[in-house]
Image (cartoon, rainbow, N blue to C red; front, top):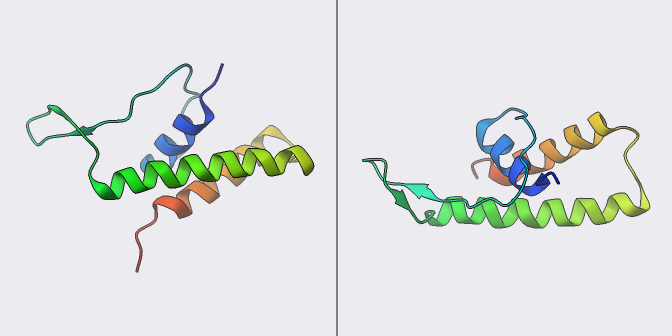
Length: 88
C-alpha cells in the first residue's frame, strides 16, 4: 500500500513529485556529521501540517473526488507545498 502522507511530505520538501513510497516511514533529522537526530521544530511543524492536509484532503475527496489520479496528485502537491513554504 502506498504511503501518500510520506510521499506528499517528501515531494514537498524536494519541490518535485517523487516515486511512490510504500509501507511505514520514519522521518528523522540529521546532524552535520550525518548522524540521525530528531526533527528541528520547523521540520516537525512541516510534518504535522502535511499530515493534517493529507487527512483533510482525502476526506474531502470522498465527497468531491478528483477527475483523475494526476489531478489528485497535483492538487495534493500544491497544498503540501504551501504547508512547507517559508513564512514571510
